[in-house]
Image (tube, rainbow, N blue to C red; front, side, top):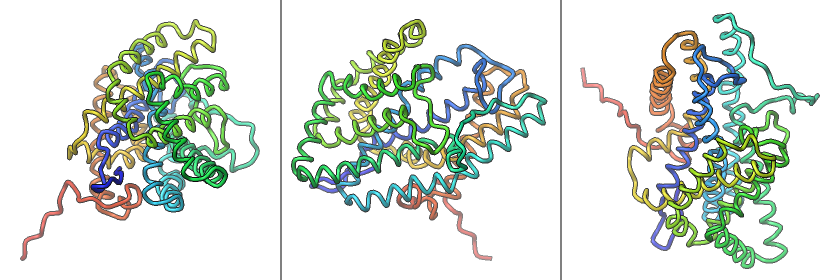
Length: 389
């Protein structure tokens, strides 16, 4: 992603890499769940371990608020460079349309794979989440692509409120207010303010186990919408203050130290706390991770690294298609007595090779690459010229 300056576009390499890492952590998360005892999942492995619970909790703490915060930051950047209309068209093309187009392969196929798992292994069918909605539209589940739907909701709400505010109080004042909000969020105690919507979402939800529970239908749900709209707006306002990233870059060690301490408290004691206290711990822990990682990457990943840039470009495609592939591999490995680390290594290497090869061969320099990434890029595996006969 680039931002316009007086000297030309400048790419935020650190934030690009961090956004890709947030998507990558989603793949890691889904690869770990089969090994969690008692997890409600498409495939349950014969080898389970309580140790899997800690990374699952940690990833859930911050991954999606980090992603939504970066979406808000980049969103305001694009809107100010291209205009509101172009921004909405771009997000419709690259967020809403992939949700619809990839749903049959990425989500619908999971039901088929779950049936294959039951038939091949002779296990019980996984428990299904039921809803009391009668409309077929509301019974439609976005599956693991739910974040695209929530992100589109955040985009529409933010652009609509911005348009009304600009008409009521004027563009200049809206811009000044955004800058002041960004300055406040980048202040030493701004992380607490950023955590407020996350806290509200957990309180509305009524529990903190597993963080914010994703919506299971296309019907908007209060807890995820409040949490992730808040995260989106934090990124939006931080972009409005030019000194925000340098401030976070100066304080990233303190934020990450706090994140480790608060995460340890979540892991060790949040279950015994009253809801409000557990929610405070969870929300602030998630946002200290977010601020710390944003500060670290914006300060130290300032130049382009070709391998990191390539993975950042590939991450969207990889996330869209990773889950059917993971589930297929998990079915093959589930009844083997191999140690969990070996199974994870096979899963990660196997899925990584397939996803990266398919990206390079089918997406990167094709119309799919232009659709998902905004432009075509040269392939890493160059087509070899055929020698003349």
